[in-house]
Length: 120
Image 1: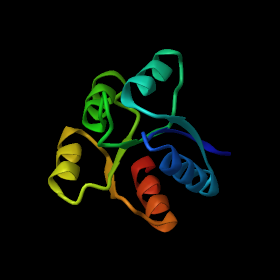
Image 2: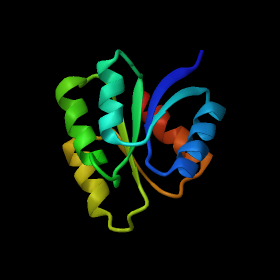
Image 3: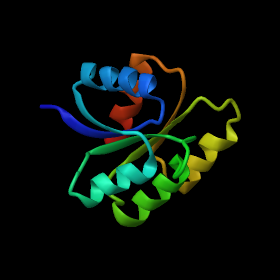
Image 4: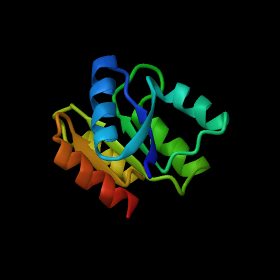
């Protein structure tokens, strides 16, 4: 049985790649391209078991997404990812409530371990 995952990534090529990785790991990605679109999907009734969000996106970024999920859907674990080399961004995501973080680029194995830990 696949696990529904809300994937929030503004780069279409990366969204496709990470979506393929998620499917390979047995998850069912529902992809949105910004934080606001993700919140609209939740308001429409989407109920993922996990959220995987990029941190740096135009409009509503990942840090705002994390805050919103902590306030409105605290039972849904959020995993933050970024290609930003400054570790303070991932630290900030954890302080705001991200269950785990990933630095891009990451391997299939790293993604699998991170998601398994976040869902445990």
